[in-house]
Length: 86
Image (tube, rainbow, N blue to C red; front, side, top):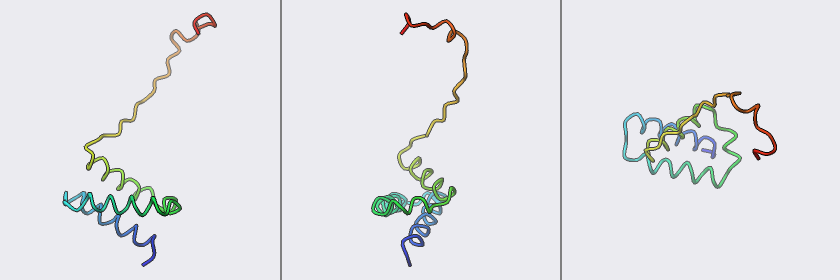
């Protein structure tokens, strides 16, 4: 089994662990991290779904939520800024 197949297998196991909340999830995350760190070219071969599985595993393991802030374009007040304000 080559490295790409091994990574895909580990990611698949991670997804199953996420769904089952398996105690092996931290080990799988570490194995995936180690493989990707040693072979960064493999990151480009991952599909978006596989990357999402890894991110979901990291979010669950670290009890962290990745916030996506919606930036509101506000023109109010920006037209009145001059050099003196800087």
